[in-house]
Each structure stands twice: as C-alpha cells, then as structure tokens.
Image (tube, rainbow, N blue to C red; front, side, top):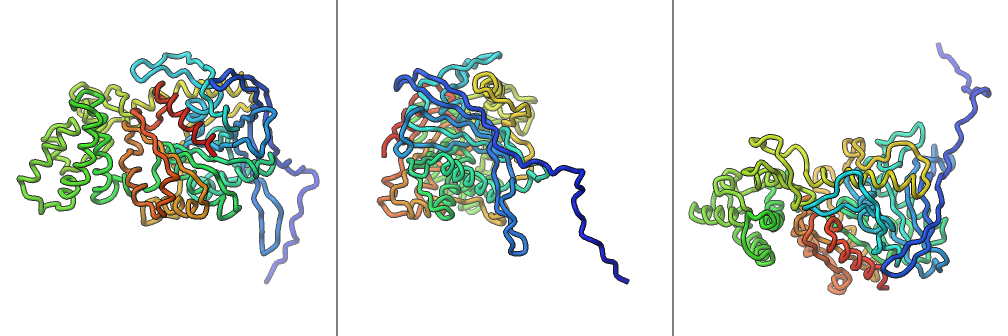
Length: 490
C-alpha cells in the first residue's frame, strides 16, 4: 500500500525570514601620521557573503551563507586605480585580526608597554603615526567564528571551519570588496601572520586560478608554509628538532642561560643543526657513544639545559617542554609565542607549562582596546561578543585536504609566483618565536622550486622579537617602515 503526500506549502501566516544585509557603520577621521595629516573614512561591521546554489542542475540563486566582520580604512579623495589596497588577517586557525589591526597596521593602536614593563589595566589607545594607511587602504578580515563573523541564521559554522572553506570565504570577500569598491585596477596586497601565512598563500593562489586576479605583493609575518618542518608529532620529529635549535639558543641567551654574542651563537646553532646534530639524529643507535656525548655537551651549551636533561630527551628537545624546563630552577616558564616573556610555573615539577605567559600578557590589552575602539571611536553597534580567539573554530578545524600528510602550501606559493612574474613577497622572522621558528621558514624558502629570478622578488626581514615583532617598540617602527616601503615600491 502506498501513500501519496501532497507537497507541503509554506504557511501564509508565517512570514519568511528577511535576507541578511550588510551593516557597515561609516565614520570620518583625521590622523597626524609620520607622513603628514591623513583624512580617512572608516567602515566597520559585517558584510553578507553569498554562494551560488545549484540543485539537480538547476540554479537556485545566490544564498546568504555568512556575515563576515570587517574593518576598513580608505584615504579620502584618492585615485583608486593608483592607490594600493591591502587585505589583512591573522591566523590561529581561530584568531581574529585584532593583533595586526591594533598592534601594527591600523590608524590607532594599543599602548602595550614593553615585555619587561607591560602596562597595567585600564589600557590605552594611541595614534599610530606609522600606520600603513599612509601608503595603502586597509581591510581587516575576521574569518568564520572570529571577531563578529558568524554563519547566517540556520547555518552551521562548522561547515566553514576548515582549510578549503576558509580560503574560499576569504577569497570571496576580497573579490566582492574589489568589485563593489571598484578596486580591480588598484595595486593589491595581502598580509597574513602565523597561520594567516598559510591562508595568504592559498588565497593568493585561488584569486589567481579562480578569478584571474593578480596581486602585487604578499607579506608573510612569522610564516609556516610547511608544517612538517616543525611538527613534533611525527615519530622522530628530526626536522623540528633541527629547526627549533637556533631559537632555543636565542631564548636561552635572552634569559642569561647562554653566554656570548647572540649573532655568533645563532650562527653556531645553525651550523651545528646543519652538520653534527643532523648526522647524530639520523644515526640513531648507530651513533658511537663518544660522538653522542659530544653532541649532548654541545646541545646543553647551546640551549641552556643540563646535559642530564638533554640525554633523557634522546637528543630531541620538544619546544613546549623547553619552555617549561629552561627556567625551572627559578620556578618560571618562558613564552612559546614570544620567548622573551616569562611567568610562574603552576608547579615546579610540571612536565609542561599550563599556559603561555606571552599570550597571558597580550590578550587583555588587545581585547580591551578593540572593544572600546569599535564602539566608542568607530560607532559600531554590534553587541555580540567579539571573539578574539574562537574555541569552536580551533576545536572543529579540518585539514582533510592534507589527510595522511603534513600541511604544506609552499607549492601554492611556487604556483602563484610562476604565474605572476610581478608578484613580490616579504617574509618576516622573529628570533624568539617558538610558534613558527625562523630557521624552519628559512628552510622552506631554500627548497622552493622557482627560477633564480623569482628569488630576487623575495625579501627577508629579521627581528629580535618573537612571533609578533610589533610587541617591541623599536622593532614595530622598523617593521612598519619595511612594510610601507614594500607596499609603496611598485
């Protein structure tokens, strides 16, 4: 017996939900920068992103999928065909753009203080005289579930928590912004930090292959394009041990555990990693006892750790444990994001620190500054929580495209640099960065499959800071000047 059910029709008494619309708030400002007075327009709020919906080979229209939070700055009365525009995001995955926005590039920044003397609450904002707005318009992007970005009502945020969908969304926002604002003819740049460098390279490649949009430049701050070069989860993790060693040396030197000139010590650590240390790790149990003892002594001297501890690690010092061990005799731990920071260990017998003291020092001032700034100075009206870090995104993030192999996007950088012979790349490194160690990033560049001329389009900048160079005032000014020169040089 069969039963036929009539097609269910919508209840005429129930109104359809209205389609979401953009809700950008517009304000006007002036700033006295190092380049002179800047008159600019700010827009903050959310932009609705839509996707084509096709079912059974039938086009069903453009359906709203997400409301993306952005803050944008445009200099008044400029020619958009010559004025650069720069799209900016941080990483995580699961981080908002607050760090580059309020720490380095925007027209206002948080007055953080210094690693040795951070300011207490309540925190302060100050004009950013070195803002990149002097040479480029700016669009700060918060990926899904960060900032005020959310899926539309009825949507599933988890569907967007992953490598491919994230790249697709950010690419679409850039395409849409350039279309609405008539910026296709503008010089265009993308700046990413940390996991944002993975996103930046993948977005640049998708813009090129999907939309035929050529960029003028990429800025990769604290880059990690090859996770295999720094992943301690692998069975041996030899590459990670080699690439982290020079950073261990720099941090140990900063805290007085290693004596000598930093430059010479780093060079020694780099040479040791390339030679005797690499050979020792590759040999395993075949390494003669005398040679092993020599390697243990050198590792202990370069890392500030005891020979007994180095021996117990089987010559393989994991970075989170290094943070916990270096200052154990003082009951303190050092930062992973920035090894210059230190904080009290929750237990002197702890195997690992329970929190990163560098993040403990940074989150409150940046978060307070951003919340105040969006509402009080830019007139934002959104009352939902601004998610500096999205726990949902970090928990759900999918790398299914790389299942069974390390996350690797250096090939996408190769592809876009070959396709666009005018694309320039700036890579920034921090000597005290244990999140994306500088030596691993250098190793990635050294293995790029590119013609010789392409390497002339890659510039490098080094800072005696950690993951975020702008947390040090002299470094912030030098970093700002370097990026401005990079963007302004066409």
